[in-house]
Amino acid sequence: MPEKKTREAARKDKREGKSASTQAGEYVHEEIEHVREGKHGARSAKQAIAIGLSKARRDGVKVPEKKATKKAASKKSTAKKATKKAATPSRTRSAAAKKALKREPRKAASKTALSRQATKAASKRSAASRSASAKKAARTRARNS
Image (cartoon, rainbow, N blue to C red; front, side):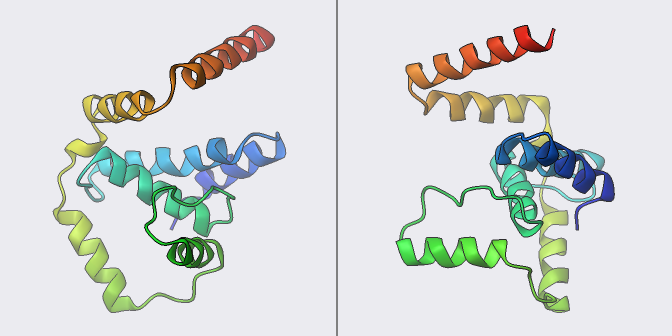
């Protein structure tokens, strides 16, 4: 369950009109902190990010569902399940999931792992897309300084 400060930060982002991915970033950041603190591990940086996004969806942040899902029907049902308020989860299943995460390594949240993940994600985008977001960031910085 997300911490109170994470929820409040995400709500603040929403009030300020920031994008869903910015709001979800609060949950992702919290998840990475959890891995670093040793609350649990993750197999990869990608998994830690996915857990954070899942928490954000369950909390009502309108983050788009995963792009690469094999069947359109399963994509819809997965997004619906994550978005609607979850019923009380099975205690056994919840405990098993926690236990499995605790066995995972902590390296997934290291600076190196996160940097590698960001580089890999950026390389999948087109040069034009990267350039456009860099220009937008520069405009934002200029406006805010």
